[in-house]
Amino acid sequence: MTVETDAKRDASLARWQKIRDQGPLRFILLRGVLGWGVPTALLWCGLMTVFTEREFLPLLIAALIGFPVCGLIWGGAMWFIAERKFGPPAR
Image (cartoon, rainbow, N blue to C red):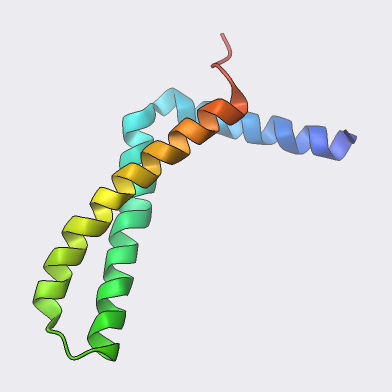
């Protein structure tokens, strides 16, 4: 590995350590539900309203339930993947 690659890995590990210290629940809610689920729901709802003749409110209700639930799954998967990538917490 080059010095630059090692520096990037160290920076990534330090960033992950800060995130890890805040806990999985915060990560999953902020990154999964609020960072992925809600924006994706709004985008999907807007696109479906524009490109189909479906009503906005039922789409919005379904999207704001379904996509955040998927965001929980996505956030949990990302937490698990990062934990495997970076290994156990430094003590």
